[in-house]
Image (cartoon, rainbow, N blue to C red; front, side):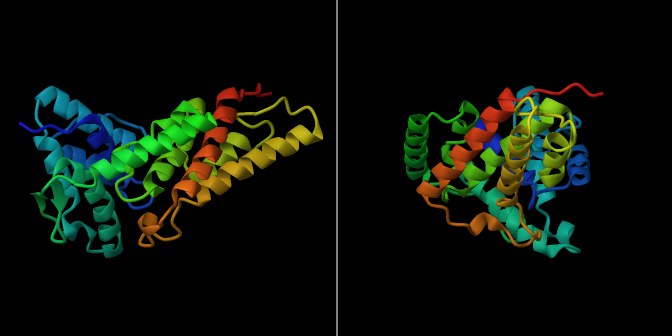
Length: 265
């Protein structure tokens, strides 16, 4: 009996829980109940989906309920009021499913297909990208996104997922559930901020804190769509651009790791 690998589950959950093109929290709750899977509760969307999928497959020793979730999620009729959501989500999901030999067609049918033949190329990209980034000494939390499943098309998805990991770290450090600019403002803004990257005892350190917040906000902004249907999955990113962007993400991770929570007066 076929099972999804951990990497495949992560990729599928990432597509279904994509910040811009994915399911909403309410939709995830409904679909988990409809496909008879345990809802792990509050978390980021992709983590919530991944935990539910992993628990179901590990407990039931099959992927039946996961496949049912995908079928229900990709029924075109679900998007009759927002048809612009369907194709971006289907494109993201099919990229993840390709490595498991599955595809969702335009009618929403989940069918078997020949497993992706681009894996060797994706593996080469992942290996070369990791080697270059290790040479730069990038943060370990960035290196884990050098995976074939994220590099089957080009470098965009690996960078996008690495950027999302910054938001995950900010939420885990603070307990907040916000996203995007609102998350940055709450975590790195304010007086005092929830997370401070320095002692904030001089004007220059206050400026550094503000500049760091602007850097994180701008990095998030590059990967968030202005409208739901304007999917950036077609952004062709070069290896050089990916390495530079991932180096910036590495810097952000390091500064967040070193940040402290100032006492609240």
